[in-house]
Length: 111
Length: 111
Image (cartoon, each protein chain N blue to C red):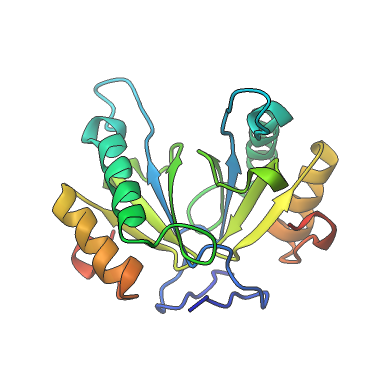
């Protein structure tokens, strides 16, 4: 199912997941120091392995600072505009299984 | 005005603009070689100067490869899920003025 948007178009990606990978100098909190790069790669590989990657389906993306550092590490799913934090691969798996595949946002991980 | 989303939440950013800044080796086409970094910085500075930056308003973001290289340089506005290509600052100004501020996608720049 492709999601319709405000402007009546279909989203090129059904769900587009952006991981903040921003690096800041200590003692500033940043997503990069919370394992964001590893988790983004893990999510991208999982989505590919599940056959979900590509046009009309899912894209897992690197992003610069999403400016929600205090809630980090953070990721956002568009066009749903649902924001998450995560700790480990189990959290990422749950976001992929429940939200990306199932369309049900993972309430316990939302920020 | 905050946009409602499928899940009944308000989008943290009313409009979240991502510029692909990906660099690929020649002769592969890539957004980085089309001036994407300069245009992202220009857009971010313009949005800030117009007082549009921040929670509930607008964010201009760096992104890794958005995987639409053939149409590049590309940028996408979420949660609207409207994709653009652009050539110069005039194009970026038009996207900011018409779409980001005015809510009217710029049809001539859509991909």
